[in-house]
Structures are given as C-alpha cells and as structure tokens.
Image (cartoon, rainbow, N blue to C red; front, top):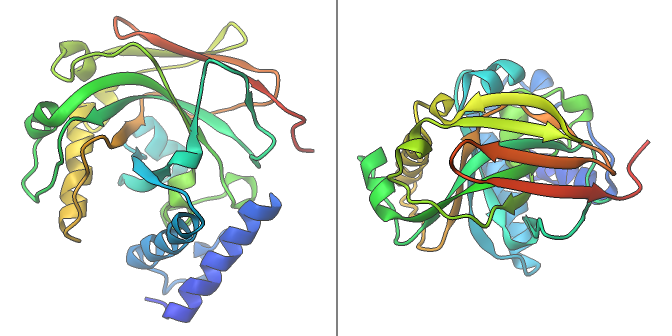
Length: 266
C-alpha cells in the first residue's frame, strides 16, 4: 500500500494529464508497493473531483472481461470504472476527438437497469431480471498513460481507461438468447477490423455485470435504477482518428454507427 498523500499526488498527475492532453509515464512499474486498492482509491479521487465540479454519475463500465482484451493488456482479471454524464455522446451527430489523447473504440453490450442491484450473491439471472433493456454500445477508451503502456494498476487508477460512451437506439430484452451468444463485428471506414462474440465476456454479458455487483457489495455499494452498465468489449480495441466512420454490429441485436471529426493530435 502507498500513503494517502502519495495516492493524491498520483491522482493529481493523472488529472493534469487529462487536462493538458499530455500523457504521463506508467505508474505501476516503479511502485512495487502499489496495490489494487490504491489504484481504485486514485480512480475515486478523480471521479469525486468531476462530480464536485458538476458531473453526474450515470453508471459503470467493465473492462478486460474477454480473453482478447486480457491478452491485449497482459492481465488476467476484469476491472471497472465509473461513467459520468459528461462522457455520454450522441451517435446521431459527429463526435469530436479533440478532447482525447490516444482514443480507441470497443464494441459491447450495455445494460440499462430498471431497478437497483446489490448483493454478494448476485447472479446473471438477477441481472437479467433487474434490466430494463440492452443496447449495442461503442465505448471510446483513452489512456492518460504514454503509448498505452498500461498494466492492470495503471488502467484502474485511470478510471479503467474510460473516455466516452455511445449507445444504440434499438432496445432488446436482457433474456434474449442472443445477448448471451451473439456475433459482433466492428468496421472502420467500411473495412472489418475486429470480430468477436458476446459469449467471450466472462461467459456472458449478464455474468460480467453480476461480477461487478458482487465487487461493489464489498463496499456496500448498490447499482441504482437507471444505471448504464457496459458489460465489456466483445472485440479488441481499435485506434480511431478524426474522419473515421465506425460501425458496430451485433448479429440480430442491432448496430450503432458514428462519424468522428476533429483536428487530431500529432
């Protein structure tokens, strides 16, 4: 473990990186005493800062839930981060990438809850029963760490590399069999760049959300009704740039498309 002052200093460094769009070197490699609890505490410091400044918590995201993403990041466990209203984008209009440092896009399913979820024994069936609907989702991830040279502790401290969320408009029931096992395809500028399946997400997306609820139970935290929960990427993350047109497709479960714009970064 590190001290509270050290946690605050690392949170300051990540905050400055986001504010100036100047990434910092990886945190964890030079801090053998840094633990997962420290990383989540650092994450929470900067989320609290944003909430204090007027942002509103609207949900959570799961990350590193599939073998392809765990292999890509060199980890063997999922993580989670917070979603704020300032991170929610409208896919019906072009989305500027000017506020991002090194953006990537992921395709996943988002659960929108009809009622609260809590408890250390929460199951996938509980998640399905509590869900109002499921939609296709494109998540924009970004790293405040140089060149995406991150491990689990780096990304957790950086709010699980969260940056933006785009939700589809076609709604589906959480108990639709396709939610559990559906082929996913990500296209950029008309070219297929990644494929996967919802079944790769900790066995099934609802199971991933249940994992998150069980983690929160340790802190007495409840997922509120209306919360948006991103269940984890079905494909590997792909770099995006201004001018890219991105389409995510779930066979039988709709699609979502967005046009990115902006000046970009050198």
